Length: 619
Image (cartoon, rainbow, N blue to C red; front, side, top):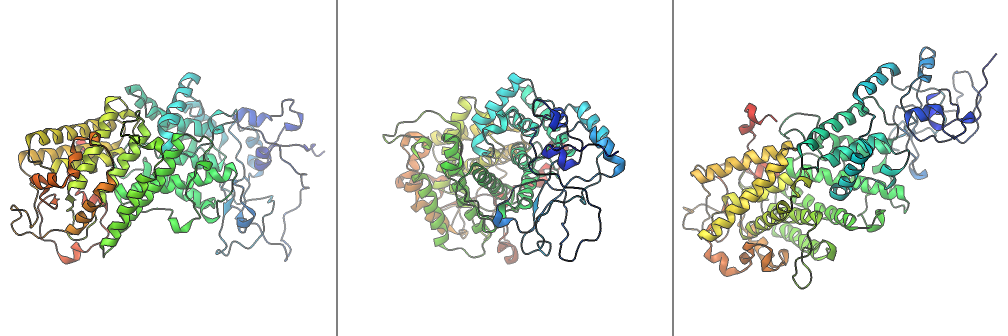
């Protein structure tokens, strides 16, 4: 006698073709979903009768299956959607019913219209070409031993979530309010948020907790615990917050790997291929996710010359607005204006790869930077209209640190001499302002809340200040103090981030070389010390100097070097050498190398990785 088939089943059990007792459940939650601690969603529709597998009719196309997750797509982009369902043989059917892990739902992947696979309509498959069936007993044993699906205690969990919302949410705006508070919230997302929140703690236990959470998240990913594709995508985005290994090491643990995973999954889900102009919460969430991935790839391209996985011209991404955020607070403003600032930095990175530059290119970048700071809302400005310093806000300081870094690297664009870059009055002033903001952060013991990319900002400002040699003892003491502020910040960051350890070792070596006289700056033709050396693109610095008044509309109390805005100060300071100071000895470089337009900004910073071959730097 054929067993009775239930008329009411949930989506998860139906996808896995396992027995579902939702029809008899008094509380509306089936046994499998209750054990897996996932939301039980009733499947709408009438169950189809079983049919024998055979050769399809000529007018009926065959559905192509893929082991990727379910994802609702708009009608305009449903052409070529590839659906899947978990397939189990008769030998594994009985064991699958006893699997206590969360059910794996359908995961739909987009195949574009340009592919030959995008010819058949969406249908309800009865058989798929999924991955080989998992071994439920082994998976349950892994979860039982590692406790990867066990969240931190409620009090600690809430504290870590609050820390993420307060310090990291502006830079990882991928979550919805219900992602952490709903009863059926994803365990994987919660574990990842707890990992990010643990990185903001001051004590050593926070780092130990971060390693523990990181291992749990990786375990959940490896056993395919999460069935929600969007939750997986958010997890990949947040995982890029931690850089435990130095970036010169080959590793799968770091922002480069996890951002690449997020980028490829966004492509697989088709987020890049469809316009995201909807007013609903899902469309807004998709826009924020794509913006975050794009921003992360910009920062990695700026810091380490990583090639992007998503390019702006390949997706229909619109600028973020306040309406894209459920909570319209200062964190939303930081996310919006940081995205626009990183767009300007993208232009700088592209100009660095350009073989022929003109003054119009630099002027356009400087005009964009000036307009960016002019259009900032009052909530993000460090000073009020009457030049009164506003209350301290960490995210506001971080966004201005990124702004000052953009001013410095805008003068480092050159294909004339590899590894040579320039310091000038604008770059020294921007570096001093950066040090002042980090000093404010350190005095409030907020350095533990900084993100890993702050190490690169310290590198840019520190290199400028280390090689800058002011003419008076008073200015020299100010310069030395600013360098110490940056090194102190890196000391805090180096405990958690491998990139910070790399930068700290580099700056400490540069400082020792300069103080011991092993590395001397070279001067320009209009300086008595130049010895007839030709300047390297001095018009770049001259162009920036013309914009100094608009780039630094701050009161004199912002930092001690605001006096550089006065032309007379530049003439009195021999360390600026009238026009520009180049770092390192200017050696003769073959034309083929000097015109190579693919040097990264790290190459311009002369970041020599050979010094890190010793075991003491393999962190």
